[in-house]
Image 1 (cartoon, rainbow, N blue to C red):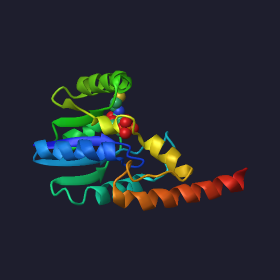
Image 2 (cartoon, rainbow, N blue to C red):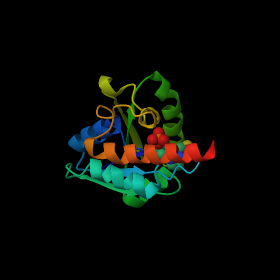
Image 3 (cartoon, rainbow, N blue to C red):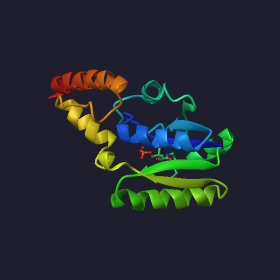
Image 4 (cartoon, rainbow, N blue to C red):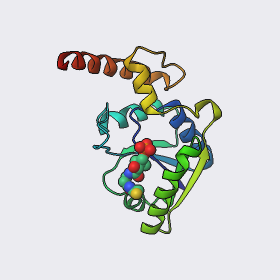
Length: 167
Ligand code: PNS
């Protein structure tokens, strides 16, 4: 059975990676589905985010990465996936995830959403914290997979240069 692990992954963090790795240990295959997220003004384009995610997961043989447009459950159905796996960090994640799980279930009752509790070490971690620390030259080694550190640093430097131009 293939599990779908969806997200914006701007960029993929060690918390995301932990959820993907744990799903990969439970299911035959994991399909990491990178969402468009045009409204969030991402640091990385959708293909760039997919490339970084694929780089991070390259040592997990049963994990592949793809991009999708539109509704997640429609994509899941196209791909023949009946399970969506998501991570929960804290109670603050719960309400929105509950809403999304219900909305997805209304659209596609055959598809189940399963949650795994984020590792305690990652419960504070988010892509926006990574971007914030990167902007100010923070240490990213405990936040993102090793092969993502350099691309994030480079993008932070580019964005800092652009910001200096504007103000
Ligand atoms: O990493 P994120 O931003 O928490 O991921 C959210 C994501 C991409 C899983 C969610 O926004 C999503 O499923 N987007 C696709 C559109 C969709 O199907 N929305 C239905 C929920 S109401």
